[in-house]
Image 1 (cartoon, rainbow, N blue to C red):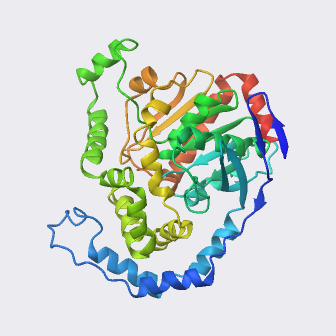
Image 2: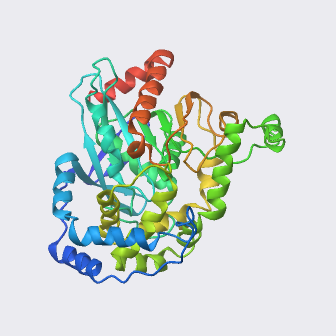
Image 3: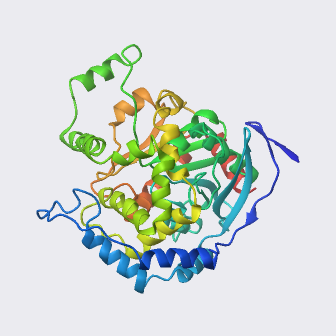
Length: 424
């Protein structure tokens, strides 16, 4: 066992990263295909135009997807494409009395000035969301910042193993990710993410502000302002001093939590029970994921059928309730473990707000309650919960602008540490 020491953390690890090739066993693939071929679809009600998704994924949508899965979808071709496109690895990482076999993508840039960037996904997404960001390893503009991209799979999600005991929460995941970055030689790094990934990054910034130089979030949620620490901000909130656009964004968030968050209640209370049905029925998992994908993007965005089925396949391959259990472990604790604490001024934070996302607070609220040093904030007129998939050019431009602000106006010593980490 080798001990690795840095100025920021001390940990022990029992392994080095191992190359990983995705290769689903043929008997498991046969089982999935047979279940799809023999699936029974439930008939739907006749809804008024515009209300087709009111009760969940419509039968007509499922019929189309299942027919595509039966006749056109080729997992082996998809599998080969994933293996060819994503340099994948696994690493056994110890955290408390748990050892997680963490799956991750690691694509290094050939540029000598590249810096490390960790991409953190959430549910119902996965590491494939990083695909469009891989171009950042070699930007077309030679003057643009280049990055070494690291994209882990959440513990219990897709290709990462699951914790064996309850109580594995966001700070544990943050420490796992931090240890991954140190193992890769990145003693200083940046992070980008949304959904649960945004909370993991916030926890990394809270626990390791010397190593985590900056984070960029596309999902921002905060607790109400404190009457003692932020009385004026609380007054703004009570009086609802919001712009018309802010009111629309907040209205969407309220709509989501009131009408679309049943999955949170189910996965946040009985994740094991719901997972029996989801993991035993490929079509059931597809309907579960497809429904959430629909409401998290612009109305005119069309989800590719192959992508939807591939997302589903990755969850089926996991064989784990981890994707549901993350709600059980964290919904009741995220306020205390992450949102009740303020990220220090040493961490440069960027925020991109997309109108069809479902978490939003105005900048003044976030600055008062959660983040001391917001160096970049942009509110877009288009885009949703999956900007790296839906509007990747916007997200990439925001990342580059955020980093440029850090580089030109931030602490030059910390930027130099980041450059040195990239040369590791």
